[in-house]
Image (cartoon, rainbow, N blue to C red; front, side, top):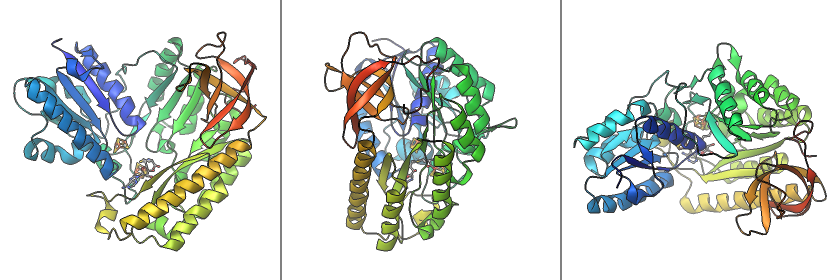
Length: 449
Ligand code: SAH
Ligand code: SF4
Ligand code: F3S
């Protein structure tokens, strides 16, 4: 066994994926080797998520597995990083005694030091949140590939009443624009073809007078052959400038993830979402005018406290009106410390499940219809490699983030841009035939052809 070998497992959102790459960058600089086999590691780290109770339960289950591993190898260090670290440090270290190390999202620079503390038989604990830490100077460790995540801001100041993020990740702060642009440049030189700019609320990005639209424009200018995506946009501050910026740059994908959460103004108010449904639908209309062909995805919570059947129907109505390409749909999960935790979690579990099922089924139908409308059209696809299900097919993605499957051809390489004519579509996948290669210098990469 290598003495300094670390294994890391990541849960939760893409920001955690990006953070794990930061952590690997930090540990590599310190001489650690990264392994993908937990049995070969002497440090096992779980980068955790607290967003819903079932996310935390999964991680507790996994920690149980590592406890067994530790039984066989008492020198193994088991650590918890990320959002659970903030919430559950006492429980994890003092009460359940399952871990040696607990490090929150703003203390990763101290990880090498804290791991040493744990190797010396004490508990390594670093859970302070910072108002300034952005890890701007740290180069994340990434395997070569086509697609990369880049955190451009950390934390959240929105305090939606159901959400733990402001507590687990602290206050909003933005990275310097130049540092993001430099990172994209390095990725472009390494052959990456697509990047996603990440933040819990990217619209409030601000660096020296540069807002998120400025950052997007600067990112898009680095390499016109690179697709630029971003997530998440909060409906309160999606600006016209941002919409025009997306429309102007061919390599910024015409796809906006715009979580609505509920279709009822009364519930939105209780959620502290700070917008009305009318404002939200107005934004969708405006975006569709400014960016022809733009598509949307969303997040929906079902069964928030006091949600009535009528409120639920309003959510279904909004889904029908917007016709989202896709949605992430959840049952409300009360989180200790949040404002809505103090409200009575009064929608019974079976009703929550029934409403969620209706939401999921409606979205499936809508996605199916949206995809049928693409039949016989050509889509520009960035080829990602062989299809997961069969070596006789290739898979790639459209600018609107849809998976496209088409017959294998040895001349088509990973990272190529190709036109595919769509001849079949399910709610989740498009199928078609190769038409021609796209010259990324003079074609609209991100747009439907
Ligand atoms: N910053 C993003 C979302 C972050 S969390 C935004 O504001 O849209 C991702 C999604 O998880 C949220 O959009 C919400 O739909 C869901 N979520 C957050 N807290 C939740 C809770 N307590 N119960 C159920 N779903 C929740
Ligand atoms: Fe949570 Fe709301 Fe912030 Fe999103 S905007 S991370 S839902 S508090
Ligand atoms: Fe989960 Fe933390 Fe992301 S709570 S969703 S990992 S910000």
